[in-house]
Length: 553
Image (tube, rainbow, N blue to C red; front, side, top):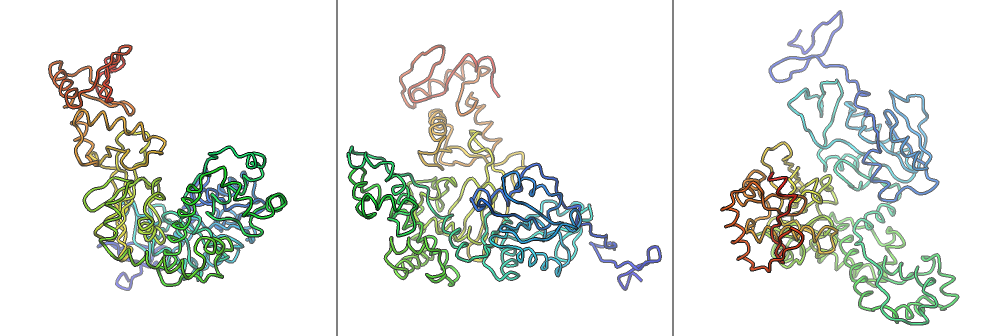
């Protein structure tokens, strides 16, 4: 019987399959056990809220809602919310809604046919936006999981299909005949209206810019400053003057100034024209990156398929679509020239440079050369970024992007690497590495090198680096190993508290004296004595009563 792949159990024929060298019966899949009790909103729906895609009066439906946690939280946000689940809410009606979520559902369905039907059913209920999420990583493949079909059966008799990120996008695109947009690992947005999808793509590539300051006292401007404020905000946002119907305050402004151009001339009298040109240039760069990414696969949408506001942006900033697309294609061509990418990395005024690479904090991405933004976008457009990515590493001499996650980058003076994701842009293959379970993970030093001077904690990071430089405990490498770093601090008789360096109170007095003298001679600082604290003007290592009491680490 076993030779035929079956055996008799309690007067029932049970199918067998092999797992290694053993023969096991297929357990009954209990899909409902994969449902999670949620005390907060799930990540896919948090991303929807953060993107301001919920509009007042819109409805939400959760397809495969499990215990209904997301329904409750969306309802608390003030939106009409409902859901259906084959186990927990089988009698609830499946109703159409503006935003539909099918979160972590298709990955627990072992039947290929049912999986496809579930995705199609959810799409059929969608009026505006479908949110699709599925598992993309396998953490415990060797413990309590059995290979079955195209996934695994867990120790709880649930099924899990772990997708590769690109595989998930291909699956969604093929089943629904769409171009799904990755917003995070395993999370995709699918817009019912293709124009809305293009608008969302473009919005994610828009730099955050401030309205230029008023620099001159002009009575005409001061008299109408409140009326002109919406026009200034619009130009800051779009880099151009509005066209008819784009600005709610149009009637009032034209009633006083007769045209936007005349109103704009008054604004220019009180502000710096160069500031506005800088904004316009930045918006041109944003649009070129967007158009270049849309041309990656040779299926860039026609002008008429773009949202009206983007069409107006192109006309206002480039005169015509053909000119903008030509410039975007030149950017794409440049990406294939290794030396051009290498030059962009080398010439960047932002980020930490090593031989053959440039690493920046994610907050600095929009301030990079547009070619580097496009470089990163090639990976992000299909794969998405690593969850919580902190550092983006650009490789100058090979087509690769790496995302590095340091969970406590802001609070830990030398954060440990948690995990990383490396994307080969030639075939979009992805390689993951975990570091959080290591006893000696890599850590970062010189954190200010990765951010811009306007980053909230820049000065705090820089001060610590100056202290460490004064002691001579930093070299050219900004990534070190935790255990070696701890040993280095001990050998130099210092400890770190917060983002400040202190002499250890338990250090050998003679060794401490030598180190202090060496540190002082290295930068020849002027020493000041202030309330029991001794520090150099070069922000050297500090000695406090608190430090003496606490001792070293």
